[in-house]
Length: 184
Image (cartoon, rainbow, N blue to C red; front, side):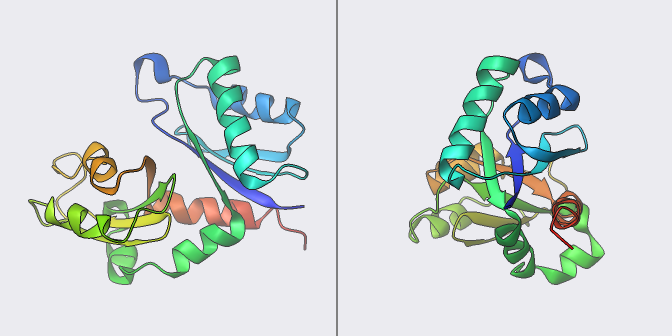
């Protein structure tokens, strides 16, 4: 039975984006998903599922969260194997080791065309560094994310697709949690 990682975009940031993780787990259980577990309060969930293809499941989960939990969000779904590949291909291993809170992985809705990556790089006005591959971007924010002008809105505009980011600490915790659901 495949194991998936679900990343909800922009939840629990205030206002209409409030989502209790207990409510999310209950919804996914009602949908027939198994071994549903959440990590932190920022919309990270892992589970096992059969039946639906990944793209269909991603769309269905987004719709159900929006309509039943009344949270305007998007869900980005990755298989545990894809997430492990994303982590293993990190082009910034030193930052992952020495400053994981300032390294983020951005899960993108779609892989941007190759000519969009230079557009993103050209938009950087600070010390941030970006590398992209397929449906993922890796961004180092050496001076902190909160002070950076390289916002998610700028990343999305430059790449022409939506996304959601997780810092390296969270990304690796998600991988470990998802791996724990694999059959022994």
